[in-house]
Image (cartoon, rainbow, N blue to C red; front, side, top):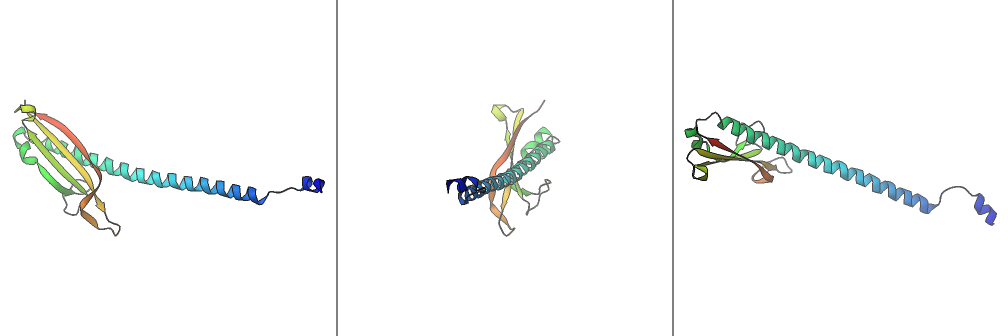
Length: 144
């Protein structure tokens, strides 16, 4: 009988179950990696767009004369991804102007914050909630 067992070739039920479990673990890991990559990609796209919108605002303010900068302050202005002011836009922009920065009348600090509006599951846009932290850009303008 011992000789019969040595000549039997094949795999046991335990080996089949172990191999199936290993394949499932690998597949679940790959699916998790794809999902995380998608979430990361969407977040990076949002950060890139918000950074671009903040930089565009600063570039626009560079065209202002030094005396006009204080009038450019804004709070929670809704904008589209291209920077157009739109009450239904997906982004919120705030521009803070600090004239006489560091007690110097010839320095003005500009701080632009841009954040994305959270979109509900049904596609509607939440009017108050934002997605993640805002992207903040700061610069100094000097009168010379």
